[in-house]
Every structure is written in C-alpha cells, then in structure tokens.
Amino acid sequence: MPQVYFVSVVYLVLASCLLLVDKYGPSMLFLINLQSFYRSRKQYPVIFIILGVVVAASLVLFPMEPGPMVLGDFIPAFTTLVVVFYFLKAYNSRTDAVVSFNDAKRNALGYVSLGVATLHFLFPSIVLI
View 1: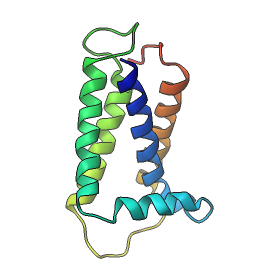
View 2: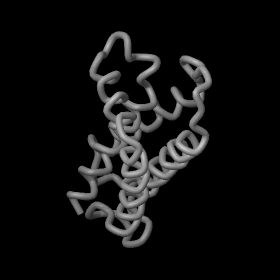
View 3: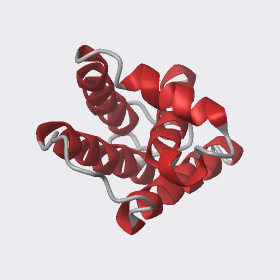
View 4: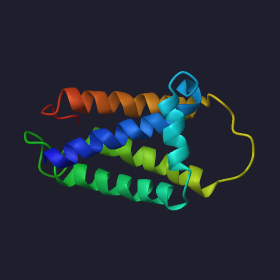
C-alpha cells in the first residue's frame, strides 16, 4: 500500500533527525527546532511511539506490491521497531542528568534508520528481507 510506504519513509527520516540532532544540530538548525517541538509537550513522544508501532505493523501486514503477503517490508519494519524501543527507553528514563553528546549508539541508530529510509524510498519494489 503506497500510503504506508510513504508514512514509513517519513517516520524513519524524522526518527533519524531526532537521533542525529546532537551531532548535526549546530550546522542544521531545523533539527534543533524539530527536537524542541518534539519535547514541547508530554504527549508528543507518546504519539510518536504509538505511531511507530502502527507503522511497523502496517509495513508487515501491507507490503508494497511485489513483496510477500505477510512479511512484506521486514527490514524497514524491524528498524522502525528498534527506533520505537529506543525512544520508549529514552522516554521511560527521563532524568535531568547531563546527556552525553555524540552518543555512538544513538548516532549509529540514526544512520541506520536514515539508510533504511533512503533504500526504502529509492527502491520501493525491491523486497528487503
């Protein structure tokens, strides 16, 4: 289904922007604006997490046309779930402690989600299993 495809690409790009804001925020100010919007209300992270679960389930159940019926876009769905679990863990462990800048795991997850979004956008009909 093309709508799920587009929403999944947008979700993965937004997630990678939120993950890479500490590294590229000083040079790309829209990332800082996106992060401040994300943190402005308590329900925005919850909505983002719920939307990620819905997108991952939709990717598995409604793949793009040549994909298998049940496990359609497995790699984008798996990446979306990993991002959801990361944001869920970050939401549950909210503290006012100093955050370490350029966290290697967070940056790696940001690059992976951006790469998967790019491949998913450029080659929509290729089955990524």
